[in-house]
Image (cartoon, rainbow, N blue to C red; front, side, top):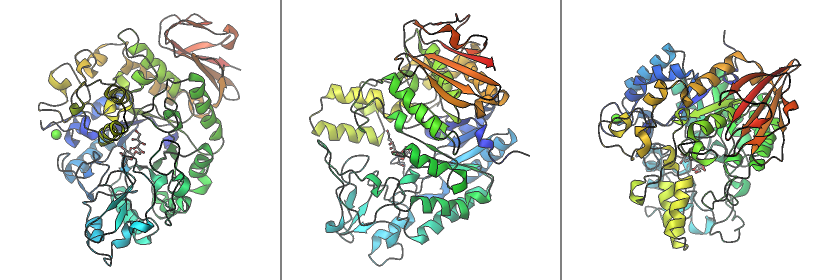
Length: 551
Ligand code: TEU
Ligand code: CA
């Protein structure tokens, strides 16, 4: 019998359906396309698939704007395609975690269509409606004000994301009950859990006070007036007790702005809220403040210190997710590695080593396992993501040069992660026989899954080994983390310790040879390495080594 916390030993693979595999030539990935690739995912060795939203949606935010929680987006397929996917996954021992997007719906959702129709409609309070004087100075994360005037009733509705993503009013128990009912519908189909979209935003201070406006900003900082808001723990506990605790499932909450103190509360099993969360702190170290587009180089000791803080904060109680990539983040080999011809494969393996030997559940984003890279499309019209297109518009108006704007997009744009999966060197990387919805990265001729599967030294087989090792080495799940060489600016070193053994992990994040004290690994046996014949005390450019030491 599988243990209740099977997710502590699992490796999760995220599929962004629009870009994964197109089975019918319309240029859009789909569910049948995913089914075609399940044997590939089984070969990789992952245990769980996190599937980004496949629900009916007008696709304003690529499915994170849901129009009908009980239907499949027609270009992804049908409900019977979904049922087939779930059956085929379970046949292969793969679990399916769906994306739960309930901070907001699409403005085309029936609830919002009703709600906006009149002030006394029974669904009016499913969303936040206010007269002009009662709105506040918050901005939308996708640019512009967070309040949109609706001509029908002359009131404004709140949208933390796009105008087509109105925020649900979780203070209304009818909203909560409708969400729980929908969750049970999917859980009763047999899915194995939920990734919960910006779930720590669902509780707002409904007085909507203005937030302080930082120097140079246009909108107020909401602080805990929507991020980790007033009733967030009550609502997550209620959801746990009413729904998720009644199934053998995993839950991971996406939580921008959550600190380690917050995370201990959210993931402490005694509090019965969620199993783990996605932190954003390590993803906000290569920018000034919290403006991802205001670029600054990563200072490795900052990254090390942040991981160490999260590893120790959740060591006794709670659980970490571990990720470099997802559909909102640029590709890690281009971001913290080196995607040049000389170092792409090597640095991708180094980054994988650095992450997968930490304590927590690792998440692999589609293409990360073959070292897919960022793109640099010259023409802004080749981009599709609402967030980066709005940023270009807004910051151009603030005087940013085209060059600075494009560099920000090349470095941080979400489309970096959303270019079609590169299956092989045929037209459109084998993703589609039609016109892809987003251009394929031009490097697909040499960087693709077919090539990786044919090369025993590829990033793919390195990930396959890392994933297999997690099943074999209990210490990867239970060992206590301790950071080593905290001030070193090029080596990320740490150890994992149990009563009778330890692992020492050393990763060179630079393109120069580095040295370390040989006694750090004496009497150790080499467990993992990304270059042949490592020399103790020396790390070649982007070299990663892991030693196992009995104690
Ligand atoms: O993302 C939450 C979120 O805040 C992101 O927008 C992130 O901060 C930003 O994109 C960093 O580049 C979730 C989903 O993952 C994202 O795809 C959605 O756009 C967003 O919520 C709204 O549903
Ligand atoms: Ca398709």
